[in-house]
Every structure is written in structure tokens, then in C-alpha cells.
Image (cartoon, rainbow, N blue to C red; front, side, top):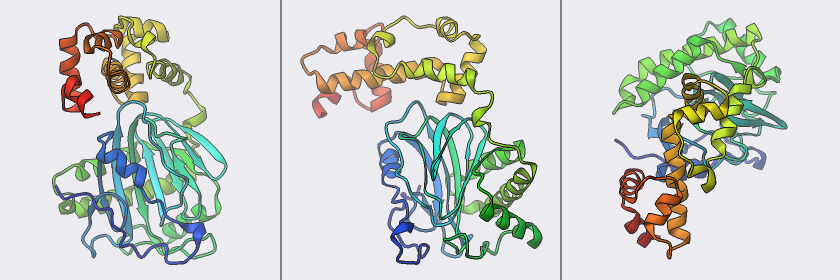
Amino acid sequence: MPSLHTKSTLSGFRRKNPSFQRDPCIAQQEAIEAGKISFRGLTHGHYPGICLPQDALPGLRSIGFWDAVGMQDWGMELHRNEGLEISLLETGSMDFTVEKSIFHLVPGTLTVTRPWQLHRHGVPHVGPGRFNWMILDLQALTPQEAWQWPPWTDLFPSDLRELSRRLRTDRDCAWKAPPDTIRAFRRLASYLARPDPSAHLSAIRLNINHILLGLLETIRSGEISPHQKNVSCLHAVDDFFRRFNGNPAFLSEKWTLELMAKRCGVGITALTAHCHAVMNTTPMDYLNLCRLSWAAEQLKQFPHLSITQIALDAGFSSSAYFATRFRERYGKCPHVYRQAC
């Protein structure tokens, strides 16, 4: 697979205006290189991703998705984009700030930021889940400038004018995504995940236009973001799993799915579904992920502690099982990992 592109060759943000400094994507790039997120993307410019041919879908600055399993320890800086960003949080949960407003995003939330809007996903850290996005250069950096959509945009001119007007003048930034829009983002992700996504530009173009039409229809419908509705159960499971982070007393309990569900006050099926929505993985896999993360920190900070003691304190039944799971996660056995620190 081609390597990720990081060098800036972009002609966007043409003006020498410090208030429009672009996102350097440093934290995201570091998370990709450290294996904290699974990432696929295409780019024209400095954004991470596989470089698109220069004449392919001009104006598409970035398109991609990442999968983050469990709570993350990295986040984005407040920034502005070199175009209109349309994003979908497909699974998981994440806080999102635009100017002075903060939203708690839940699965199926569609967000939009204009080039002049200071924003970031993750406050302060990116949340777990699958996050999809695209950035379109509309040749405008301020609300006063006319938008010029890419030439391959297929919406009827009157619809494009309406979409431009609504996005330039409305203050809304988050909506409940309709099912068709979610499916279009999923189709895009399926093409981006293929060995050569640039061989599927026609399909990518069609799905982008499908999303633009869905965005217009969503704005017309006035269906607000679900960030303040029907999330109490998700929050309960979210709060429960957050307690696993760095909490050895909690990690070392003999957890089963039945016990987890009882603690959360839900059934096993609901627990599993909510865990997928909040943490983007299964309950037991997330538990093991937290146990391994805590154990890795102990290996680095306390070289005098035995590996067996650390394994038992983390909640593993034996040092052999711990070593197997640790090697799967970090690519080396605990002893070698400790020596490398």
C-alpha cells in the first residue's frame, strides 16, 4: 500500500492570514504511526492519506475514516480546515466543539464545519469509534465569499445554491444523520479500505454526491443532533467502562458479561450493543485492552516488580495467558517490552 502522505503541497489557504492556519494533523499522524487507530484515507495536500492523482476529484482535499478502539490518549488542537468538512460519527462517542459550543456526539451524528469555524473533535481526547469525514475546498474562507463547488458535483444548480446559502447563514453544526447518508459513508469506507482506492473514483464521487444531497435534505427537515436525546443508557455504560482506565482494583475483579450487565443495569445483549456503540469493541475485549494498557505502564515504571505479579494485579489468570495477549497487542513479550523501555 502506498505510504501516508504528509508533505504540504496544497494551494488552499492561499492568504497570509494567521487566523486561518490549517490543522497540521500532527496528533493524528502520530496516532496512526503508533497503531492507536486504524486509518484509511485519500488526500490532495498535507492531510494524512494516500495521494490522489492531481486531476482526480479536484477540490476534494481529504476523505477517510479511522477506527479507534477504547478511550484514546490523544486529541486534536483547535483548528480550521481548508474547506467544508462533513463528518459522521458512525459508532462510539466523542465530544465536539465548534467555536464556543460543545456537543456530545453519539452514533449516527452528522457534523459540518465551515472553513472559518474554529473546531476540534475530541475535548480533549478523541473518543472510541469509527469516524468518517470529507473536506471539500469551495474556494472561500469567509462567510462573505461565494462558494465554488467542485466541477464534479452533480446536484442541480438550484439545490447547490440552497445548500450554500443554508450552510453559510445557518448556525447549526450537528444533525441526526438519515439512514441513507450513513449507508453512503459506509460505502465510501468500503472503497477506501481496498488495496487501491483510487481505482474506485467513480463510486467515491457518486457517494459523495449522495451525502451532499442527504445533507441538504437533512437541513431542510430540521432533524437536530441526537446529542441531547436518548443517551442516558449509553452514558451509563460509558461511565462504567471508563472506570477500567488505570484502576487496578476495578480491573482485577473477576468480570463476566453477566456481572458487567448487572452492574450497568442492562441485559447482556444491550450491554454488548452499547459497548460496541461507546467503545467500538466487545466488553471482554475492552476489558483486556485496559488490563494490557495498565500492565504495560507497570512494566515501564516498576522494573523491580515481577511480570507474574503485574499479570495477576491486572486481572489475568496466569502469566502465560498474560504473555500471549501482551504479545498480540504489543508485538513482543512482556520481558522484551520492559527491556526496550
